[in-house]
Amino acid sequence: MSATVVVSERFSLLAVSLHLATDDAAFAEEFASVFGGRRPENFGELVPATLNATLRAPHDGEPGELTIESDGTLDAAAFLLGFSSPTIPLRASAPIAEGWTSLAIGDDPQPLFSFRGDVCRFRDVPRWRRILAHYVFLRMLALRQEALFFHAASVGVDGRGVLLIGPKGSGKSTLSLGLASRGHQFLGDETAVYMPASRQLLPFRRPAGIKPGPRAEAVTRSLARVQPRGDEDGMLRVDADALFELAPATPLPLEAVIFLEGFGDETRIEQIQPGRDELAMMQPMATTLSGAPPAARVFEMIRLLGSVRCYRMTAANPDQTVSILEGVLRP
Image (cartoon, rainbow, N blue to C red; front, top):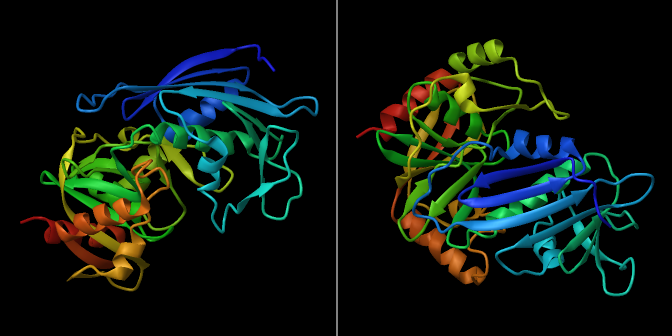
């Protein structure tokens, strides 16, 4: 099925160039609002890669269709199935026709995605643009096979790279933006990029996702000035450099990992020797070291933790917590 193209745009993330052609202008805006990619990048050390995507929106009861052509080859259905989780319980389902591979979500008997070669057909479901934008984003990251990706925030303090790791709501965005408001390097608040070969963090400044909850005073003031709109979940999406003047983002040697345990009555931080619990908290994304066996990924994470200082931290008042964190991270 062909689409009448109304938007043809290029995005760039980590030197992966996405050429998007679609009949749905809102999809391009959705991708940019969550993942960025419209600003120039400078990743001279990365080999450029390309991904071409053509998307036709669902209409008149017909499914939508996404065709992706990239520099690499992969089983698209198996790739997406690898991201199944308790919150997104994908499973194989009966194919829509011979030659197709279909995936459903939860107990829904109808497939959500159906794949054949480079083509993905998808049902018209609520928030389909967000779902497909994430899929395209993950396909882009899969072309950076040399990187480890984490659900983490990353910052630089006095030229030293720091990972902030923890579950949702533990303070990753709060603390990374709080440090950025004090002039420290903001590398990213949702997806952290670590290069095992150089042991460096790469900047990956997606639009920041700010949830309801505690915030540094400088962040609160900047949000009142910028007044970004919230999404369906109440999250505010905003470029961090719209909030305050950011220090330039450059690759930094990773020096410390902070394991966040959420918010409490007072800030507590202690240096630890990492073990199994910390390794489990690392939460590497399924695109991590794409193509490498699981044992290689685990080895790289063990090597990472063995080469840096590690801390466990409970946050409290964001400004006080950021001040304490600065003191710990500075020599």
